Image (cartoon, rainbow, N blue to C red):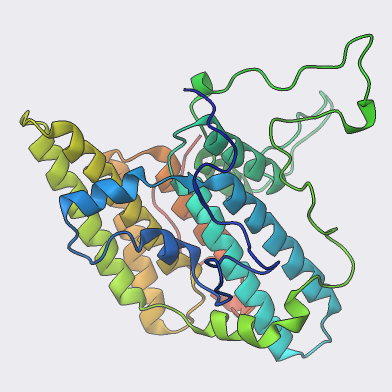
Length: 333
């Protein structure tokens, strides 16, 4: 793999200091819906699936924006007064947007070094990597926490062979030591400090509340995921017969698979709290368990599991709604 130039893909960076949006457009939009709109319907053509898979995605911008939104949610949560329902829902909107970007970074394959670096740095910033303990350390980690940590590590895993050596260490005559790079990509460079007053959400509270309330149709997302997985499996079977366009069929199959996992992630992220939504999410759990038996990429399966665990902490969800969605196949390493 060769390192592409910085910012060569479709950027998911904020344009006005706010969330993900298109140029000259300040509306809040689900970033997963933004990326998947290349697929016009739930019955896409072969060309649409190929175009979806081959579209350049700037995962570095997505990762940086996810971190910025997580920081802003933390600041806004500290600043809001007790009992401020409006502020709580605004925090939920920030969490949903951030989780959607995390799901996109984790699910999308690492096609080049930039995308691999985005995954690794986001994993580092979200705690997927724990420092090695000393010999006298006794772990007190519970089974559920350890399982979630394995999901997170697997979700952001990248092929080792595509990672060259990191930044060189300073030599005897080196200067600029105070700013010497510690990693290939500094995710938090230029972001407002995590603590302190809110940076922008306090002036857009109504917009974020509206975004948090604008949940998609979860039943449609479930059916879309099923249709995309069926399309993927059928295209793989057709490609294995050796037609002239077998390579395009495999690219389209991968596009359908990615779209299926992104639809599943969307269904698990949005904090709809009623019996119907819980039943739909349990069906998504069953569907992802089945994809584990089929042998889909581990990082895609882990991405949905990781997102589901984190989505349980969206501010607008009541505490008793957590840990109701348990995946059967969980021993990811």
